[in-house]
Image (cartoon, rainbow, N blue to C red):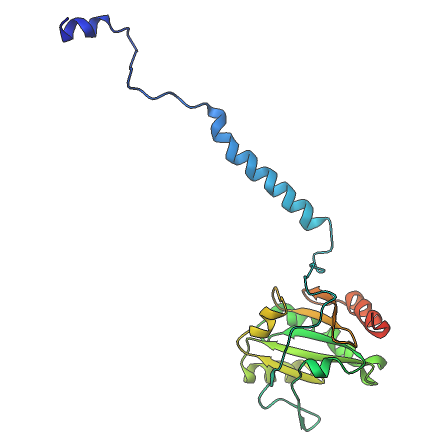
Length: 208
């Protein structure tokens, strides 16, 4: 049989080498999967309090910390000291606020921290309020606290962010409640408002 005869016997529109067409539904599978994941994520995000992100460190001893003071930072004519684990476990609770001068939400929450520093619990030393200055320049940290007020009895400089990583910090600002025995009792992600600050202070006074 010649090539011409074979060509004439091939039914019109038939191409044995042509690939099979895929079902249009196959293209919808990735979109369906993406939509399902988005729904699950949305439910998890909005069903709870986003400021209270679960932490594996809750109930455990605070990771080892030994920060240097912020260079040149003064309060009432005296250098502001840094702090370490021993300073957090002195028989009274402590609130550790992670902040930075370049952090806009930190400026939003700062009046709340100043208000906390003026409560009887903090002024009388029943609860310590200390700051962890995250990835900041000393000059900028001094300017920040000088302009807005320094509510902290101690401020440690975490220049490289190493301490924040070990503490499981997601981003500034964050506030940790440390019990009298040095255990992390609670964690607040994002800027504190008066309600959240009051809740943490009351729990700090209970010590558990």
